[in-house]
Image 1 (cartoon, each protein chain N blue to C red):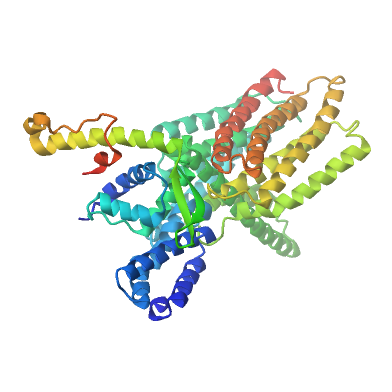
Image 2: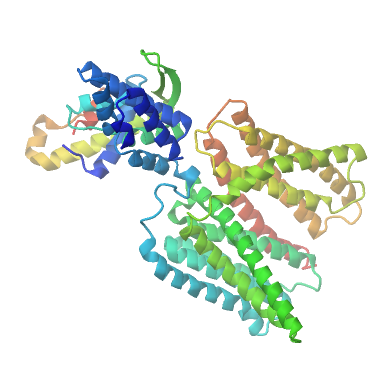
Length: 132
Length: 448
């Protein structure tokens, strides 16, 4: 499935921040993780990811450092900053609202009341917010 | 694609890498990062059972079209590049023709407005200043026509223009009045920042929006200077030919061609900045880099001179000269910053700038000492108040920049974000001072 361009743009930053909140990572692994989280539905390109990572770094939501891959190659790793965690929390609040609203609208009010409400509780994993 | 035709994996990767580097929009680190991505992809495909050459072919293909990669980077780095190396071309071409017609209309309007107060019989001083304000208003209108800012911003800007225009005529300046000169120097600064309000539109509160206006100002100035240079040559030749014909061209040139030309050139320069971005590389940051070492050497030499001679002694107007120097230093710091990507590591230019700012501060100390020593005789004249006020405004701005530059150079905080926020956040202070000096000082000193 191809997400519409707007939806792709809106989800990419929270998705990267959520993945980095699991621990530091690098470009190729982030793309693989997105594939995995989306069950193979969302396939990011390098042309999308790296500019996004650099933009997030410019905004100091993530930070990067050069390290060594297991193969011995030079590799750039990214880690989320405290500001990034705050931003992620804000994204989660907004996405919870959006997802809950859409769920109501899509499934009809009656079914939504029958326990299908996604809980906006802070205990939810970041991935639930983007599992559209 | 030639890289994929090659069957030697390392050669193919090298060729692919060389292609990315040749696009010019990627830093070495960016290319390293992409290369690691490509190699990881190749390793994975080989683990899945592909031969080396097959893996390279597919991995390169999956990296997407390389123009797209370069294009994405150019967009991300567009603040640094601004003229948008890769994306130049397609858009805006359709509007260029009617855009140039509108531009000529605004330029003609600016030229006529510049001359209007004089034609209506106003005396020479306010006529010249009022004409300049009206021409600047036409320039602001031409920008507003293109950027379509929110109505509230147009209104705020128009109120500022109207206020200063009315005051230019309403203030009863005396003959050879110092306050008239103070008004003429400060009003354009305040008005130019109002032009910035219109230029940045809804983004006027953001650092990015303000920085775009700073860049626009630098490029506008470069274009304007080039047009003025060409115009000067043309007028010189015209004057020589008419003089040889026995006709005196002085009056026509000085009273009509110069004001018309200057007012029109302002609008044309603004239009050129926005529509011909691919013609000139961002010149202001380049000039900033060229002049940073030269100014550093010059200011260090001045400082050495001040130390050797023991200061400025009886020379009163030195603070004004040092103010001009501080304006230039502020400009250098601002324009070099305007071309920095947010994550760039501090380079030699910034180290030099830190030295330059500190040296300028020391020189300023000598100038202040000379000034304060003279306040006793003659007291606070308008010129001294302005010289001190401008000095204070510039010093605070530069002190903040120096502090953040220092943090950057000594690795405490490598990002340019705070420096950017400080410098763009400080812009309204210049505007506030300019308005205050133009509006409040003349009446305080009885228009002397």
